[in-house]
Image (cartoon, rainbow, N blue to C red):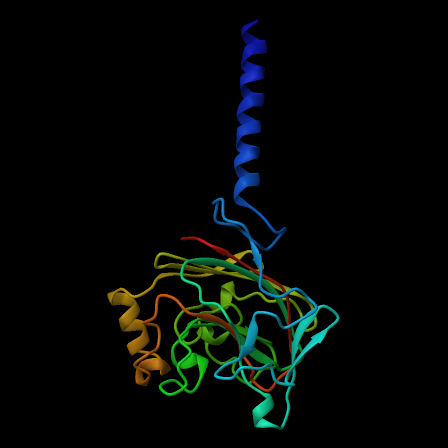
Length: 244
């Protein structure tokens, strides 16, 4: 009898552990999920540009295309048709998940907490920190560890943690910003973990290329941006969850 009770207890324990894991992991391999009751919101429906516009403009330029259910950014010569694509809505505390792939030598980024005021800030990166999207092998901007894929651009990141898929294959990235705690994952690997807006954050910014940009990294809510960098890059399965 005692042995049966022990076995039953172990089964119950294993069931509880499995249930806990199921509640905190979502989206398949490469994604985690902050465990709360908020629902995921699709930022891209695979068919339209609903919810997006070029930074500082009220339209989506021809540099951005919908290509077989993906957002495809490609180089164009017309300045009026190119630029970073930003969400219409702003976000404060969030879990952002998306997939991306690059062509050979390509460079892009996912920029967040973008403050859209073109009279003060000509580019999204004047205010928003960036998760780097990169071909680590052949892109020009691959010389520094904190410029590699998945890094917090020019601020944090190690080469040992930057493990993107081969060019042309899909990567899974996740940015979790929860009341000042920032985490960035690339294909399931934690690449960045830091605190925003504290003394250490200010020191990091002061030692980076953003030290001459007084609006950089100070806003606690803002738009999400996908960067136009004059290269072919694809995004899909973009979704966000509010963590307020």
